Length: 498
Image 1 (cartoon, rainbow, N blue to C red):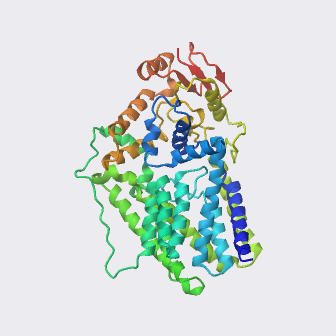
Image 2: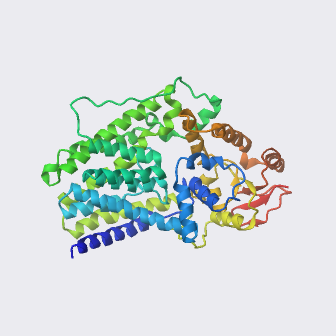
Image 3: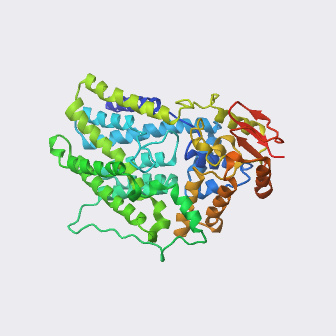
């Protein structure tokens, strides 16, 4: 009998998870999954990706995420796309369950508890100010798993179960060390009693200014030009509203616990505000001048992903207690337009793809059709060149070539540059080998070689083949005479370089 309320709560969280999936959608092989999915597939089939594996290995080497997924696929004999979809739904469920457990510690009122979880579920894909992050991605991401782990660590800290918190933290660190670091930082803020002395943080930097490590200023400038979300001092004013607004509200919330919340609520809000201030100051210090330029990719502002999640959790509880109460019409008035707005935002973000890309179903997207043909009909050692900006092309919807076509390709200007930027930081903190320190040069060589792609002639493609060994290309426009194209779909052509 005692288990029945908990079972009902689990069912409600499952229903909220399903609703969140319907609102925010699901896409395979997009954005950061263009990095992680090739690593998973290479573990499953080492014959894949004969060239340029460093463009995903340089990032995945710091996590056990790809190895874990590959082991799970082998152990279950379930296709990788089905495993990823199932784990994505499980991650949504775990995040919302963690939110519910925190809300029970912070709110006594049941309407407040469920409103807090519902608000987070409705806003999972809201942009986190200028960080280029969402609270939760539209695909399985190690960051999402570490977010779930962080929430359960917070629950354990609130309940003073520190051994459990430590064990969960180990799992989170294994899948995403960077994001789990910020989660653990907040957990420490939450666990440690404030002292009378002023808080102080020291940041160690490199022994000398500048980028160094043989990288040319041209290469560094081109990398930095794509990483504006690493530099909050360069953000437009409205992004700063997204920085300062939550901090102001959290300070206000911290004084409201006596109106029906709990000491845990006030503690959460006050420590979260202090956590946010510290990371904003750290971000300004690391990105405000040339001395720390190579460490800017540590991205202290990524801590705002957790701050936004917990801010909406606290705000939702107050809205539920003060406004929504036990009035279904009020819940509908708030959440139906909100969910519709988030749904439409996702449709505008991925207009050429199904809202939920169910595994095992054929896609009508010409880009995905092309990638699927390549996967089925070209040799595993085929080496492709594409427009370096192909992920931003109309219809591509940020789907990654390596992730879905399962073939090697030259570097791109959308996701590969993110790995290059990370490699700069890794070299700075002595966490990378010689090969990784060469990655910026390799990337810049590819960018220079692909410059003017849309106007390439047959001789330009032959030059790519002679210099880099490229044997195939994917073209959006007409093909030069003399290049056989065994596949075309009205939008794209797959051509072999003679």
